[in-house]
Length: 84
Image 1: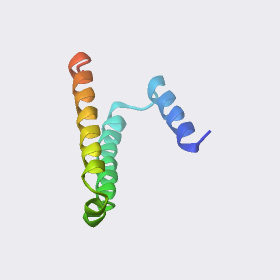
Image 2 (image 1 turned 45 degrees about the horizontal axis):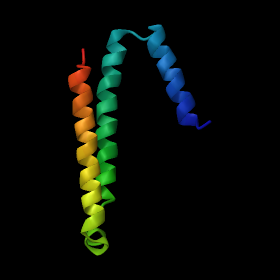
Image 3 (image 1 turned 180 degrees about the vertical axis):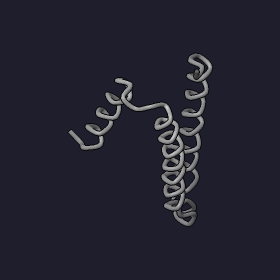
């Protein structure tokens, strides 16, 4: 089993058990947002426009359509199961 899965399960159990105070959870939420933004930025740095031009429009269109499907499913889930 990959180590990150073990870490995720341990974090889930700690959160579910209510061991952490609310103030720590708020700090972790900010850290999570910053790390996610850094990861998305790093992914964006790996995109080379020359490569996109070389592979043509079909893979780019597929990526765009995949992104739109993911956005639609996410929005639908948010409407059906609103946060809070």
